[in-house]
Length: 106
Image 1: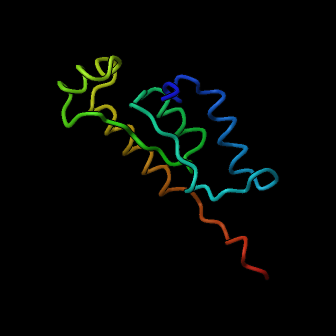
Image 2: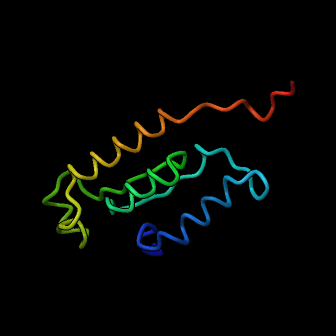
């Protein structure tokens, strides 16, 4: 891979904003996904700033102990904290106001 996207937070958010900007790429919000190993502080920051962007988590292992062997940063970001951050992100997404489809001509 090319490294952890959420460790390059400012550039990733700038790219996401361009992708969902109607004047630039105009991609559907739900079609833009940021993948992470679980950098929870920046997951929560992304939830606050761009809740309409999807999050994907690469766990690399089925439990915390195995993750800590495979992923060097796993000790800093326990699975339960990642799960909580994902729950917060999903709740923020559900609470977004809905907008009319751009195909709707009224």
